[in-house]
Length: 287
Ligand SMILES: Cc1ncc(COP(=O)(O)O)c(C=O)c1O
Image (cartoon, rainbow, N blue to C red; front, top):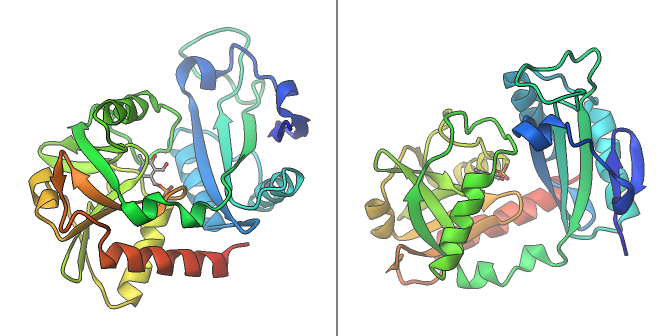
């Protein structure tokens, strides 16, 4: 059965949702996006995603085309119309479709933004088998642009990173710049030593993960120590545990980096506990 998607104010069957070939999202990756997880038909961390969307748009000189309440209504309507129990809502806003290809930004008065939202159904994501076995990552050089804090749709290099990981028989890649891990291809990266969680500090070098903010808050509330600083692959390989966070994987243990087992080579207790706390608290706060 085809999905009902949202395009510029209309709810349409996915086959009927069409965007211009001149759309700047398509031609220039001139677009930002968000992915909000759906658990038990409810939206998790919605306010965080709206706040980051607003920031990304601002950084690129784009307006927010819908209010927070309108965005919430569209998210909820799509979850309902597509009967999504678990999964996510993808949202993308582009600078619109001018009448021709041009590097210069179009006048927003005459070129409205393109707003697209669609759902992705992933039944049982909270009980993903990967969370029990952990994932394996490789390290690759971070070749992305230097405003990774803006959530743009320029995802070619992260996509290539995932393919490199796949070719190496692994699940994902951690990107490294100046000898230190920035983040995963679509997630933030962490290591654990004893009761201490270490993750890179916020800057233009990484995406300011909404899951990251929530997990660090829960970790501090659970009396765990949090150190926000960069770490190397060698330090990660020698750590007790490693894990990643994102809206679609929540907290996911990493059990191998570049062929070296982390700790015992099985998911560690800190990652497991944080995953449980994150899922519990997110479900409670979901709207
Ligand atoms: C590069 C990158 N880092 C981190 C994240 C995690 O962010 P969030 O927790 O908001 O999903 C993502 C998510 O897509 C990402 O693409």
